[in-house]
Image (tube, rainbow, N blue to C red; front, side, top):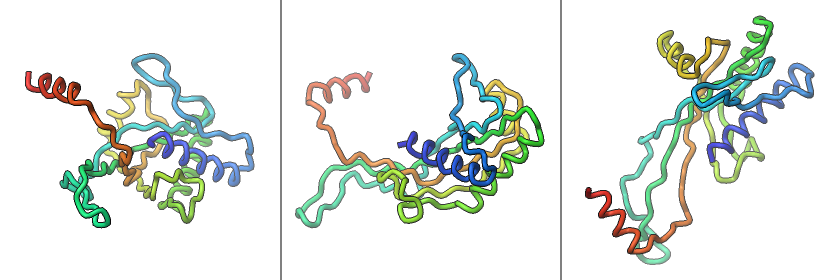
Length: 189
């Protein structure tokens, strides 16, 4: 599901930038791995990258069973997991002024499109009810840590927090008793 969120946001941003700049061949890209330790951002492009995710406990139910009123009982079901994704959008252009212009376009787009749902975005994956976006303010120390972990120097960028990506596994898989016993024995060691 995370891949659907990133692809959707990338395509929405692509469309917006193409309209604003008239560059029909412009493409927001995903990060490329340079090697095992760090990443590479494509030149003259906006690169997007998942830099963190966190579970949001605000809406999480502690109930281990879901009520099934029509079927007259309770059924075992794990509670939904609500995730917040932190997405980095970096403008890596040879001309620094052009990097700033594209960074401004990114901020303008997400300022005017803070909420995506099935009503205003029919191309949003049907598993995703809604996405809300907010700009993340990092201190200088936090920025340095993000870029150091990527193995790169700072470039004009913005990090957005995408709220409420809900994970639900409607297709429960039964685990055989042999496997379940083995998992219990292994976890007790």
